[in-house]
Length: 298
Image (cartoon, rainbow, N blue to C red; front, side, top):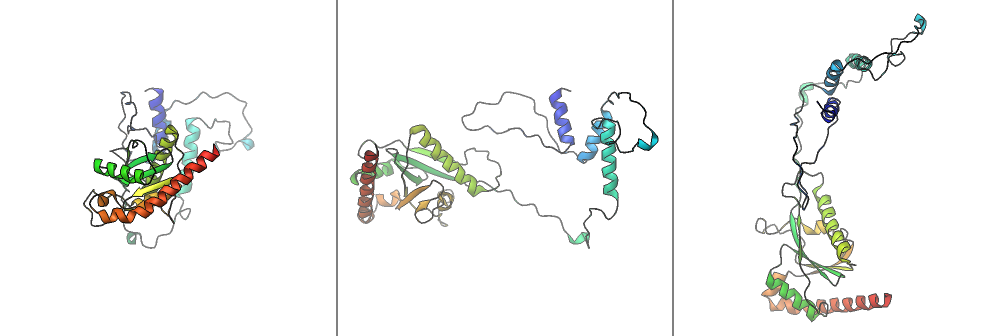
């Protein structure tokens, strides 16, 4: 038995769980081949398992010392000359704790009717929220988000709308996608909403750091609330809660939010395009004012 296995056995006997990563992160190198021990919960309590290990351990050598008078001797292993790290000293402490626990009326809650308390209902493990976003950044300033994927027709429509408003005149930026959860074999989570918010914020912050974005505004195309009559898997988690929208501001991304109609509805409805034109003109003015402010700062 090597040193690592011995260490794990002692930790397990003391009731301390040893954790090891068993999930492969995205884009991570595969874990080197190794032999995993099948850890099964022991039926005996940690105290008895620890005592069994101490029984198997060899007794340490004691240093000879001068005998003490009987009145100075004590039955307490802490007060005696016996080393506290020895198995016999640890067993003595365990026996003392067991005797105190076995005494009636000490540290035992009174239960009027034990049968009245039925078995505890185990809470069902929480599952992570699932959603997908399409992201486009306009000149490192404005972030465009849309739920799900963006079709080629929707991309062309968005480029035409932004060009008409004077926001994006060059080539349309590349679209990136974000899926949550990141791992297909995602395990149970404590707070699915908070973890989804942190995951989205980390993705945007990482993209901004790598590409030098200085985000000023968030443009959202489509509905933020989940539709109850949507097809299964078509609409996703309530994105309004994930973005944490409050008074036109996304608390998750710390950006002011502008919301427009869905790009799919604009493809077949000319009246919606006409109604959107005043809002696009206002966006164009905000874009020009922000560009002027940036030029003045430099």
